[in-house]
Length: 74
Picture 1 (tube, rainbow, N blue to C red):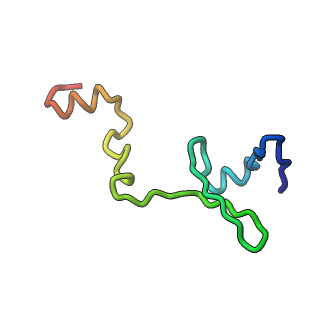
Picture 2: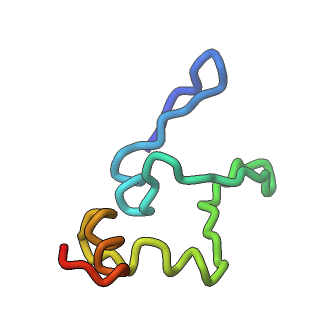
């Protein structure tokens, strides 16, 4: 796969690679150089709190979660 560098240094990562590597909008990539090659590495935040984000709602809206926490039906 290849991509052309735009005037401002931008490159589009091919969709097949984005899908396979889980690169979505907002993903942070770290760039390094190794033996004359450009290497992009997806940053993964390993803080334990990040693993819990979004795990408790189970598809409910915020108002429903808050009502549940307050002991109200929702």
